[in-house]
Length: 183
View 1 (spheres, rainbow, N blue to C red):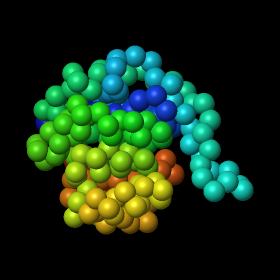
View 2: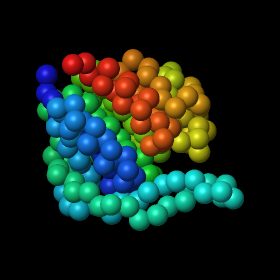
View 3: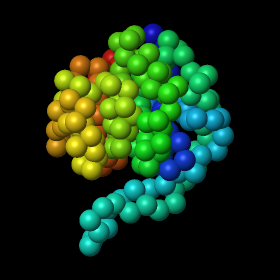
View 4: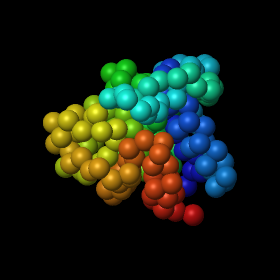
């Protein structure tokens, strides 16, 4: 089995989710690969909560390098796909090549993961119907309208589909992801 994990994001993706996830996989002797609509340096953000705000706030984050374009990815080369959150999934869910790639991972029974708003891509790909998932609370309605069951847990594993509410769920999320992938 491949020891490569695909991270998908774009401009406006969550910087902390990208950096932590890639470092966590390097620590576990896996090869993380960041993909985006184009191979280039991405403008990332930090999403966090602030007292007195009804929604999250967005601050400039560390940039990351997309090593490969989504259109150049073949699911057979990776053990898993992780759709990062932030603002990027808002437009990535409209990318037909990404939706096709996510379905390719599903067709090969690979581990499919999403954090926060990343669940929007899985909803758009039609993968949440009949499954229990979590994500950013603001996408609960999207999940339910697509036939999914929204959970308020920090992280949820439903078969080979693993989701997390936010970067605050990293411990629970990565325990499930690494258990799904095995040694």
